[in-house]
Image (cartoon, rainbow, N blue to C red; front, side):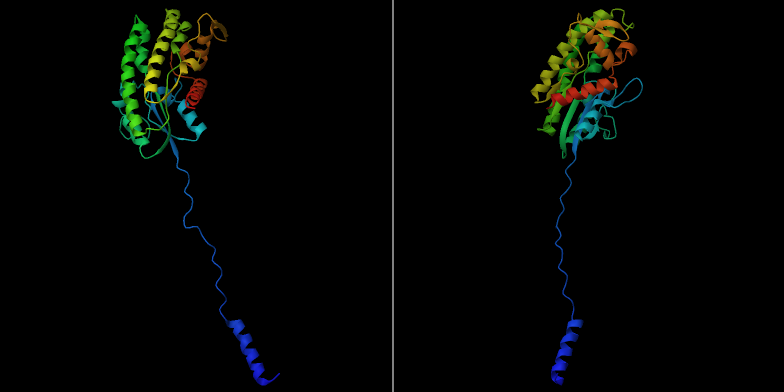
Length: 280
């Protein structure tokens, strides 16, 4: 090979070895990642039915069951012993209360959040004293008027805060049916009979209030055996042959044997199912 050609060949080879390698091709990256879905909240207001109170200590309430089943963040503002008037006048309970009333805390929780559900269970503590009055039905009729007013006021504020949120109001098992077998009530069978009419009246009037505000109504009384004729009998393992509606309320509440109006775990499950069905 001629000398000149040899020099050129060496220079080319040297250049190939020492030249800067090409930049690696950059892997394109996304300028923004997809944000996680916004957490949906469930706001619960009311009384001890929502807190899960029981004579053996606090248990899982229907509200907690629903929150788990529907994968919702529960904001439970309910208080043991609350009456319908307390919703807007006494401090809420639970870690999200912030020193506000149940109604004010609920409104704040609904604003600026993706709310999937609100439940309201109230009125039972208003009605309970009527069970020991000479005329329970008259007492209940007068008491329901005040409950209607308080519930309507609460619903108006909730609707203003969240016009499209699903609201489900609920009632109670007819616990006074349990007076049929509870020895604490000498006139228990009479009270059980009167309670059927009392709950029919209460539920009809309260359901109408919820309907006015586009809310659903879960008739827990019906779901837990209420309204049935007391002549329809069933065999109860503890009390023998009793009205079927009495046997059912004995299984779903603590009233028959402990004179406690709160639901058993099976009762809370039945209430959760009634609320879910009403909200569909």
